[in-house]
Image (cartoon, rainbow, N blue to C red; front, side, top):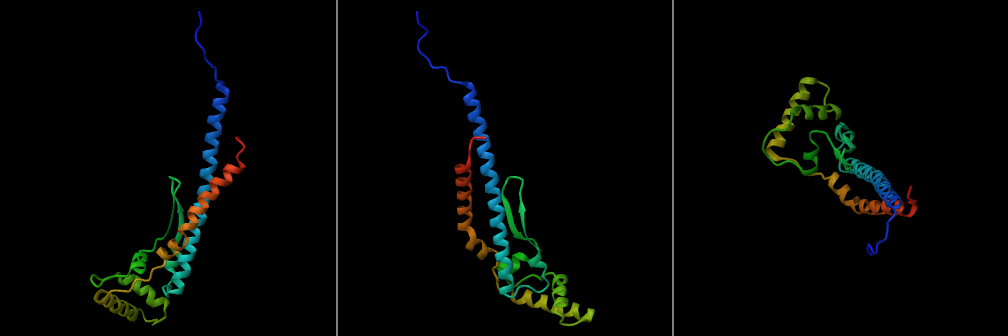
Amino acid sequence: MSDGMYIDFDQAAFQQFKRNKKQFTKEVLSVAANGLKKSAARIVAGAKTRLKDNGSVATGMLRNSGSVRPQVDGTVDAGFYADYAYWVEYGRKAGGMPPVKLIAEWVRKRHITSDESEIESIAFAIARNIAANGTKAKPFLTPSYEENKSRIDEIMQRAINEVTNNFNGG
């Protein structure tokens, strides 16, 4: 009597396939992560240029707060971390008082006066004006992202292609 018909698959080949797949995935993710970091750096650099071009650099605090921050999940944050970055990007509607302390620093950097009591008075007057009239938006990060977002997809595709073309199965 016959036990039927069967083919015995080689377990060693299957194990090698699993190792190759894991190595391939690791390499693609590594190359893609580097691409993301480069893209994020390009976005931040473009935004810094826009800040200068639109007259938003006085103290340098906002410009210097721009950075790229890789996250544990493999994503990358590109942003500006000064407290007032949002207000420069989107503007501010009339209403509540902005922080006088940050405006005082701006007055100091602009050398409007060197008298400390005058600095505080000027800063308070500016803050009151902003509270009454708001500020105009001066987008810098969003336009830089929009300008570079198609390149992010290209970089990811290039990373996959590079690994695929160079992959030898470990």
